[in-house]
Amino acid sequence: MYTLNCKGKLLVIDKPVVMGIINITPDSFYEGSRKQSIKDIVEVAAAMLADGAAILDIGGQSTRPGSERLHTEQEKQRVLPAIEAIIAAYPDAIISIDTYNAAVAEEAVQAGAAIVNDISSGDMDEAMLPTVANLKVPYICMHMQGTPDNMQQHPQYTDVTAQVLDYLAQKADACKRAGINDIIIDPGFGFGKTIEHNFTLLRQLSAFKILNCPVLAGLSRKSTVYKTLGTTAENALNGTTVLNTITLMNGADILRVHDVKAAVEVITLFKKYDV
Image 1 (cartoon, one colour):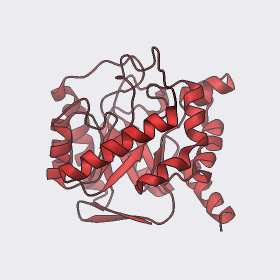
Image 2 (cartoon, rainbow, N blue to C red):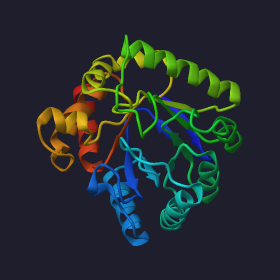
Image 3 (cartoon, one colour):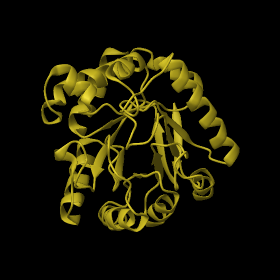
Protein backbone atom coordinates (compact mmCIF):
# COMPACT_ATOMS: atom_id res chain seq x y z
CA MET A 1 0.00 0.00 0.00
CA TYR A 2 1.16 3.52 -0.82
CA THR A 3 -0.12 6.82 0.56
CA LEU A 4 0.57 9.98 -1.46
CA ASN A 5 0.14 13.45 0.02
CA CYS A 6 -1.41 15.46 -2.80
CA LYS A 7 -1.47 18.96 -1.28
CA GLY A 8 -3.37 17.72 1.75
CA LYS A 9 -5.54 15.28 -0.20
CA LEU A 10 -4.45 11.74 0.61
CA LEU A 11 -4.37 9.31 -2.30
CA VAL A 12 -4.28 5.81 -0.86
CA ILE A 13 -3.15 3.16 -3.34
CA ASP A 14 -4.16 -0.07 -1.64
CA LYS A 15 -5.31 -1.42 -4.99
CA PRO A 16 -4.53 -0.25 -8.54
CA VAL A 17 -6.01 3.11 -9.54
CA VAL A 18 -6.76 4.88 -12.81
CA MET A 19 -5.35 8.13 -14.15
CA GLY A 20 -7.51 9.68 -16.87
CA ILE A 21 -5.80 11.56 -19.70
CA ILE A 22 -7.09 15.00 -20.74
CA ASN A 23 -5.00 16.51 -23.54
CA ILE A 24 -5.49 20.20 -24.20
CA THR A 25 -3.66 19.97 -27.49
CA PRO A 26 -4.53 19.99 -31.19
CA ASP A 27 -1.95 17.33 -32.09
CA SER A 28 -1.87 14.49 -29.53
CA PHE A 29 -1.55 11.11 -31.26
CA TYR A 30 -5.07 9.96 -30.32
CA GLU A 31 -7.62 12.39 -31.70
CA GLY A 32 -10.29 11.31 -29.21
CA SER A 33 -8.24 12.67 -26.31
CA ARG A 34 -7.91 16.21 -27.65
CA LYS A 35 -10.02 18.79 -25.83
CA GLN A 36 -10.05 22.52 -26.52
CA SER A 37 -12.95 24.36 -24.86
CA ILE A 38 -13.25 24.72 -21.09
CA LYS A 39 -16.79 23.34 -21.32
CA ASP A 40 -15.55 20.15 -23.02
CA ILE A 41 -12.68 19.80 -20.55
CA VAL A 42 -14.94 20.06 -17.49
CA GLU A 43 -17.43 17.65 -19.05
CA VAL A 44 -14.79 15.01 -19.75
CA ALA A 45 -13.35 15.51 -16.26
CA ALA A 46 -16.83 14.95 -14.79
CA ALA A 47 -17.28 11.77 -16.81
CA MET A 48 -13.87 10.41 -15.81
CA LEU A 49 -14.46 11.10 -12.14
CA ALA A 50 -17.89 9.47 -12.33
CA ASP A 51 -16.32 6.44 -14.00
CA GLY A 52 -13.84 6.07 -11.16
CA ALA A 53 -10.68 7.97 -12.07
CA ALA A 54 -8.49 8.65 -9.03
CA ILE A 55 -6.33 11.17 -10.90
CA LEU A 56 -6.90 13.47 -13.87
CA ASP A 57 -3.76 14.09 -15.93
CA ILE A 58 -3.83 17.47 -17.69
CA GLY A 59 -1.34 18.17 -20.47
CA GLY A 60 -0.94 21.08 -22.85
CA GLN A 61 2.24 19.92 -24.60
CA SER A 62 2.02 17.00 -26.99
CA THR A 63 4.79 14.46 -26.41
CA ARG A 64 4.01 12.22 -29.38
CA PRO A 65 7.04 11.22 -31.48
CA GLY A 66 8.20 14.20 -33.53
CA SER A 67 6.30 16.78 -31.51
CA GLU A 68 7.74 20.26 -31.17
CA ARG A 69 8.32 22.05 -27.88
CA LEU A 70 5.82 24.78 -26.99
CA HIS A 71 6.74 28.17 -25.62
CA THR A 72 6.23 28.21 -21.84
CA GLU A 73 3.55 30.90 -21.96
CA GLN A 74 1.57 29.02 -24.60
CA GLU A 75 1.63 25.87 -22.48
CA LYS A 76 0.44 27.84 -19.44
CA GLN A 77 -2.40 29.39 -21.44
CA ARG A 78 -3.63 25.93 -22.30
CA VAL A 79 -3.44 24.20 -18.92
CA LEU A 80 -3.99 26.80 -16.21
CA PRO A 81 -7.60 27.77 -17.09
CA ALA A 82 -8.46 24.07 -17.44
CA ILE A 83 -7.07 23.19 -14.02
CA GLU A 84 -8.83 26.13 -12.41
CA ALA A 85 -12.15 25.21 -14.03
CA ILE A 86 -11.98 21.56 -12.98
CA ILE A 87 -11.06 22.44 -9.40
CA ALA A 88 -13.87 25.02 -9.28
CA ALA A 89 -16.35 22.34 -10.34
CA TYR A 90 -14.77 19.42 -8.46
CA PRO A 91 -12.68 20.72 -5.54
CA ASP A 92 -11.79 17.22 -4.34
CA ALA A 93 -10.38 16.13 -7.70
CA ILE A 94 -6.70 15.17 -7.74
CA ILE A 95 -5.07 16.65 -10.83
CA SER A 96 -1.62 15.92 -12.17
CA ILE A 97 0.09 18.33 -14.53
CA ASP A 98 1.81 16.59 -17.42
CA THR A 99 4.78 18.85 -18.17
CA TYR A 100 8.57 18.84 -18.35
CA ASN A 101 8.70 22.60 -17.71
CA ALA A 102 9.31 23.63 -14.07
CA ALA A 103 7.66 27.03 -14.49
CA VAL A 104 4.51 25.39 -15.85
CA ALA A 105 4.55 22.85 -13.03
CA GLU A 106 4.82 25.57 -10.41
CA GLU A 107 1.92 27.64 -11.71
CA ALA A 108 -0.20 24.54 -12.35
CA VAL A 109 0.16 23.48 -8.72
CA GLN A 110 -0.71 27.00 -7.61
CA ALA A 111 -3.82 26.73 -9.82
CA GLY A 112 -4.90 23.48 -8.17
CA ALA A 113 -2.85 20.58 -9.54
CA ALA A 114 -1.45 18.26 -6.87
CA ILE A 115 0.96 15.95 -8.75
CA VAL A 116 3.69 16.68 -11.32
CA ASN A 117 4.05 14.18 -14.17
CA ASP A 118 7.35 14.73 -15.98
CA ILE A 119 8.26 12.55 -18.98
CA SER A 120 11.90 13.65 -18.68
CA SER A 121 12.41 13.12 -14.92
CA GLY A 122 14.01 16.56 -14.76
CA ASP A 123 16.38 16.02 -17.69
CA MET A 124 14.69 18.67 -19.85
CA ASP A 125 14.59 21.31 -17.11
CA GLU A 126 17.19 21.23 -14.33
CA ALA A 127 14.92 23.39 -12.17
CA MET A 128 12.23 20.70 -12.03
CA LEU A 129 13.37 18.61 -9.06
CA PRO A 130 14.00 21.54 -6.69
CA THR A 131 10.73 23.12 -7.85
CA VAL A 132 8.72 19.98 -7.09
CA ALA A 133 10.47 19.59 -3.74
CA ASN A 134 9.48 23.14 -2.87
CA LEU A 135 5.89 22.52 -3.99
CA LYS A 136 5.72 19.43 -1.74
CA VAL A 137 3.70 17.35 -4.19
CA PRO A 138 4.18 13.81 -5.57
CA TYR A 139 6.36 13.49 -8.65
CA ILE A 140 6.14 11.01 -11.50
CA CYS A 141 9.58 10.06 -12.87
CA MET A 142 9.46 8.58 -16.34
CA HIS A 143 12.20 7.04 -18.47
CA MET A 144 12.66 8.38 -21.99
CA GLN A 145 15.57 7.75 -24.34
CA GLY A 146 16.12 11.02 -26.23
CA THR A 147 13.46 13.72 -26.48
CA PRO A 148 10.00 13.67 -28.08
CA ASP A 149 11.31 15.09 -31.36
CA ASN A 150 13.89 12.31 -31.84
CA MET A 151 13.10 9.49 -29.39
CA GLN A 152 11.72 7.06 -31.96
CA GLN A 153 14.44 7.47 -34.60
CA HIS A 154 16.84 4.73 -33.46
CA PRO A 155 16.12 3.53 -29.89
CA GLN A 156 18.80 1.07 -28.81
CA TYR A 157 19.51 -0.85 -25.60
CA THR A 158 21.74 -3.76 -24.61
CA ASP A 159 19.26 -4.74 -21.87
CA VAL A 160 16.22 -2.49 -21.87
CA THR A 161 14.81 -3.51 -18.49
CA ALA A 162 18.14 -3.28 -16.68
CA GLN A 163 18.94 0.10 -18.23
CA VAL A 164 15.51 1.61 -17.56
CA LEU A 165 15.53 0.25 -14.01
CA ASP A 166 19.01 1.65 -13.35
CA TYR A 167 17.95 5.06 -14.69
CA LEU A 168 14.82 5.17 -12.55
CA ALA A 169 16.74 4.03 -9.46
CA GLN A 170 19.15 6.92 -9.94
CA LYS A 171 16.30 9.36 -10.55
CA ALA A 172 14.39 8.19 -7.47
CA ASP A 173 17.53 8.75 -5.42
CA ALA A 174 18.00 12.22 -6.94
CA CYS A 175 14.39 13.05 -6.09
CA LYS A 176 14.86 11.99 -2.49
CA ARG A 177 18.06 14.02 -2.20
CA ALA A 178 16.23 17.03 -3.62
CA GLY A 179 13.56 16.69 -0.93
CA ILE A 180 10.71 15.04 -2.86
CA ASN A 181 8.86 12.68 -0.52
CA ASP A 182 6.36 10.89 -2.78
CA ILE A 183 7.77 9.38 -5.98
CA ILE A 184 5.97 7.41 -8.69
CA ILE A 185 7.96 5.63 -11.38
CA ASP A 186 7.01 5.07 -15.00
CA PRO A 187 9.12 2.92 -17.36
CA GLY A 188 7.96 5.05 -20.26
CA PHE A 189 6.32 2.68 -22.69
CA GLY A 190 6.72 4.09 -26.19
CA PHE A 191 9.19 6.80 -25.24
CA GLY A 192 12.41 5.95 -27.06
CA LYS A 193 11.54 2.26 -27.33
CA THR A 194 10.61 -0.15 -30.10
CA ILE A 195 7.59 -2.42 -29.89
CA GLU A 196 9.95 -5.23 -28.90
CA HIS A 197 11.43 -3.09 -26.11
CA ASN A 198 7.93 -2.30 -24.85
CA PHE A 199 6.91 -5.94 -24.71
CA THR A 200 10.12 -6.82 -22.88
CA LEU A 201 9.39 -4.12 -20.29
CA LEU A 202 5.82 -5.33 -20.01
CA ARG A 203 6.98 -8.90 -19.47
CA GLN A 204 9.48 -7.80 -16.81
CA LEU A 205 7.48 -4.99 -15.20
CA SER A 206 7.57 -6.66 -11.78
CA ALA A 207 11.32 -5.90 -11.64
CA PHE A 208 10.46 -2.25 -10.97
CA LYS A 209 8.78 -3.12 -7.66
CA ILE A 210 12.28 -3.27 -6.16
CA LEU A 211 12.28 0.55 -6.09
CA ASN A 212 9.43 0.51 -3.54
CA CYS A 213 7.48 3.20 -5.38
CA PRO A 214 4.11 3.04 -7.10
CA VAL A 215 4.54 1.89 -10.71
CA LEU A 216 2.61 3.72 -13.43
CA ALA A 217 1.91 2.05 -16.77
CA GLY A 218 0.90 4.12 -19.79
CA LEU A 219 0.09 1.93 -22.79
CA SER A 220 -3.29 3.38 -23.69
CA ARG A 221 -3.94 3.24 -27.45
CA LYS A 222 -0.20 3.54 -28.21
CA SER A 223 1.46 2.26 -31.36
CA THR A 224 2.66 -0.84 -29.50
CA VAL A 225 -1.02 -1.79 -29.33
CA TYR A 226 -2.37 -0.67 -32.68
CA LYS A 227 0.64 -1.49 -34.87
CA THR A 228 0.86 -4.97 -33.38
CA LEU A 229 -2.84 -5.44 -34.18
CA GLY A 230 -2.63 -3.77 -37.59
CA THR A 231 -5.23 -1.17 -36.68
CA THR A 232 -5.36 2.47 -35.50
CA ALA A 233 -5.31 4.33 -32.21
CA GLU A 234 -9.05 4.88 -32.61
CA ASN A 235 -9.62 1.11 -32.70
CA ALA A 236 -7.12 0.13 -30.00
CA LEU A 237 -9.32 0.03 -26.89
CA ASN A 238 -9.63 -3.76 -26.77
CA GLY A 239 -5.87 -4.18 -27.23
CA THR A 240 -5.25 -1.57 -24.54
CA THR A 241 -7.48 -3.51 -22.15
CA VAL A 242 -5.49 -6.69 -22.78
CA LEU A 243 -2.16 -5.00 -22.09
CA ASN A 244 -3.55 -3.18 -19.04
CA THR A 245 -4.55 -6.56 -17.64
CA ILE A 246 -1.01 -7.84 -18.15
CA THR A 247 0.47 -4.77 -16.42
CA LEU A 248 -1.73 -5.44 -13.38
CA MET A 249 -0.63 -9.06 -13.29
CA ASN A 250 2.97 -7.81 -13.30
CA GLY A 251 2.55 -5.24 -10.53
CA ALA A 252 1.30 -1.94 -11.99
CA ASP A 253 -0.28 0.38 -9.42
CA ILE A 254 -1.55 3.16 -11.71
CA LEU A 255 -3.06 2.80 -15.19
CA ARG A 256 -2.77 5.98 -17.27
CA VAL A 257 -5.55 5.75 -19.84
CA HIS A 258 -7.83 7.56 -22.24
CA ASP A 259 -10.78 5.28 -21.40
CA VAL A 260 -11.40 5.36 -17.67
CA LYS A 261 -14.48 3.15 -17.45
CA ALA A 262 -12.81 0.27 -19.30
CA ALA A 263 -9.69 0.51 -17.11
CA VAL A 264 -11.72 0.57 -13.88
CA GLU A 265 -13.51 -2.57 -15.08
CA VAL A 266 -10.14 -4.23 -15.72
CA ILE A 267 -9.09 -3.46 -12.13
CA THR A 268 -12.40 -4.71 -10.69
CA LEU A 269 -12.13 -8.02 -12.51
CA PHE A 270 -8.42 -8.37 -11.76
CA LYS A 271 -8.98 -7.83 -8.03
CA LYS A 272 -11.73 -10.45 -8.07
CA TYR A 273 -9.29 -12.86 -9.71
CA ASP A 274 -6.31 -11.90 -7.53
CA VAL A 275 -7.82 -12.73 -4.14
